[in-house]
Length: 433
Image (spheres, rainbow, N blue to C red):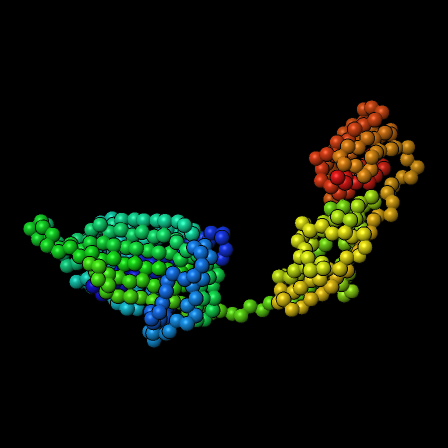
């Protein structure tokens, strides 16, 4: 039964915090030839696989795991390079381990692991007549997969006397997600997968089953999308309801201590109503910005970006880019706190109105109104064609002048500054709703 125990354990090795459901993609979980993954065995005393917290926000605090003093590893080979390749013609990959000789054979097709059996020695092998799908990627929290298989097991005879593997089932449920704390460090956005596999070993004589042993493997696997193969494994194997083994092991990963930024800069600052880019002085920590004439300054909403991980407040009120409105009639002081939560810097933002409307020809006999407008503009003049462009130069409307008064419909345009062009003249139009 030792080989069967490892056979079942290997089921999970093939597969690879917030309320958002976590997905483990196939990117790091599909094996390549010569892949090897190492594990450290841990003592199971006091171990609790359940963790704390809700299903989508679990915390598994295993920081105090005790080293059992042993290690274990799995490795992959091209199935064709193994001595028993001809016995498993449907397999393209073979997986071995440091505990026993031989391989488990798989058809790995890019998303699925289809297992065709195992070969340990001339007296210890199993050949499936139909493969079992161990795992399918990608897998998202809440997903369930299952498969079935059967075959023959060594030693077996022919006809009436044989040993069979029957009623093999594999069920997989991505049942929990959250944070995994290991002795070496912490991983967030971890997905736990619960795998239960059962099968019958039946010995036949004279067409009668003289032995029927039920093997069950009940395992949990913790995955992180950036880590190849399971980060942690825990499970038990039972024979006819009697526990035969218990496994607890985890990968020893390299964790680096993140260096949090102490930068407290404004990288950008803008208004829909601005007449030009803001002047950001990173030495004086000031921002000067002009808005179009007639803009109300008492409830402006800025769009801004800050140094990575930084946040901004005004009088202890958190500022959200594109959301929080403020009164800019007088200069406003923003306090920017760095990602490290320690460094702070005050910034003074000064907003001014454009002094007056600018018209390229101040002797023009053309008129248009109202300006600023909420969307409708009326033009009177001798131009033959009118074109309106936005501040990026994109034409938003172009029309012929066919009457004394031409109506220009800008109701579908966003607030901001536009340029009205009539022949050789250019005028500024402000949409302000």
